[in-house]
Length: 237
Image (cartoon, rainbow, N blue to C red; front, side):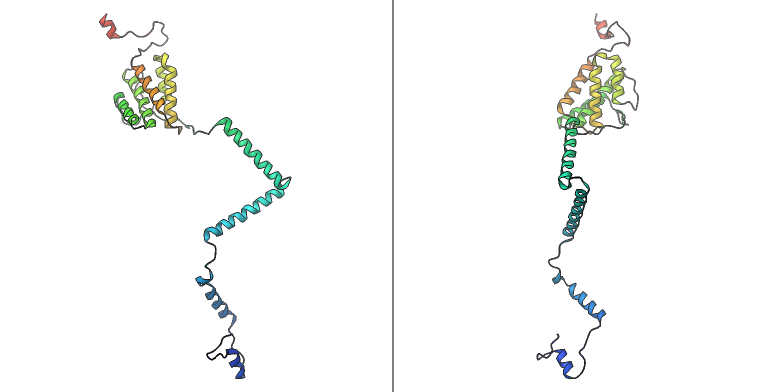
């Protein structure tokens, strides 16, 4: 009840004059109430948007869980047993198969568009190795191996050749190193396309293979005569 100065209420004053009390129409009254309740002082304790979203999520999860327990034989206990069984199967598969690794869907070219010599690839590999960048070091050392074989005419210079192709082709002239060449090609592919990380040991294996190939004489295909003689040795003899 609205009181006027002096403590007299509007209703009392209206009644004392013999007139009906003043009333506010419903529409303006509703609008006045809306404006009043929209003031910040009435919303200080309201939950934040994040809290409301979390509450909605937990309500949805609770309804989902209740629906699952109703549909599962044995109720809540049956649902828990099923969840534990599924987790056990997943853990067993993970233990037996290991962490899934991304495999290359297709082999890409070994070299980029800019041709470089074997010496340049070796220098780049050593620079990466000095900084502990083993992925790049392995890549450059494999490129040095293949480029060196091309420079010795043991491999034809062919753009677009993959590491696996280079290993198989080089293995025909250097059969004693075929397994190591294929292993080096796998290291290159795993690092470049398979998402794996190279180690210092893997780089040293490729560097050792590179040095060994430099001192290995090629062998003619389908030949039993042994390695091709070194011209320098013949000249010295």
